[in-house]
Length: 150
Image (cartoon, rainbow, N blue to C red; front, side):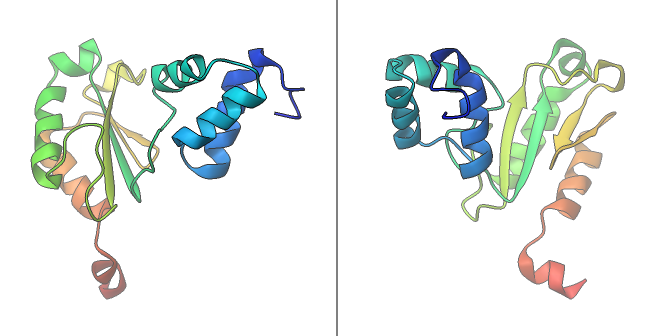
């Protein structure tokens, strides 16, 4: 905030840096930012919840984002989402109890030509099917004991 001279119009940059430093934007942090930038807490919260890239709770060790844009949806994104929800026993927007996987959806990843697309741990992967996505998640999301055994 100091770098931006506590200017209210730097809110998005401040939120990005705060999330980079703390991993997510918890309520106390949002209140501190609102107070420091002299903005209403409702405005800061509204910005933080409007943009997909801000997280209000800690992410799991691994992340899976499923594109629900038109091209991906038409080519089966709903079945991808259902598959992951069943495998992980969570809904979109949740993290598994063991903290290993966070599942979310996106309006569009910009990878329409390779629909349906997902992002696993920051890597965009296109042309997914429920089977290929299930296999990818099994490989990426292993328990610590499984990683040591390999």
